[in-house]
Image 1 (spheres, helix red, strand yellow):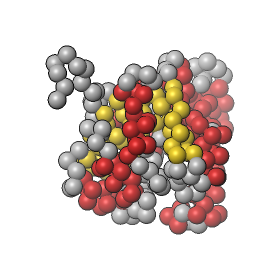
Image 2 (cartoon, rainbow, N blue to C red):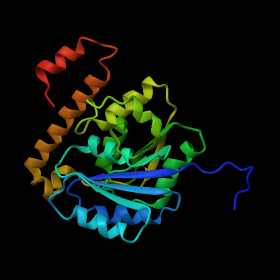
Image 3 (cartoon, rainbow, N blue to C red):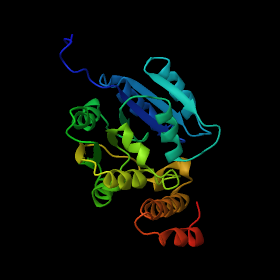
Image 4 (tube, one colour):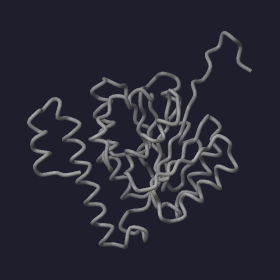
Length: 244
């Protein structure tokens, strides 16, 4: 038991947004359950029509740290994370994707430790040694990873407009750099996630490609919006050719 003179570990909350993840989320929920360093686990179902919400509720019934919040319609990943953030006062947050494979509690601890120890303001987790395609995508575009630990107050600097849809990670990265946050890369050895093109809930190969294209349009839009304070003319460009 820590003495009165020893600093106590700050509260840590995990936020897990999910949409149509019945095929993948159970394993991630188990890892969250097995990770003792977490004080709160906030599960946000972003209006899934499949069994995602029911699976979340089953997990929460077995772990008192878990709470489930459900959007009645699909509002996008960014809004799901903001909903989770509004449900906690924890000063340190862990953000994860719901479709991760081969995730272990040690990966979560590795992401959180630098922030808890005040050696970083945010960590970003990059896949390593899982699947070549997802490894390559992570290391080419590290600012898109959904695996992060961070000081919760960094979210105050995010443009809500930029964070809409799949723009959250870009908006967070820009906000963190604008706040001169200390960012540390943490390799997530063996972790990967399925490609959108092979996921049946996204309609098969060609619909998966269209979903991917839509995601990247939202990402580009997020970058333009998040950086427009330094480039005011970008605002007019966005409003004329890129819509939410």
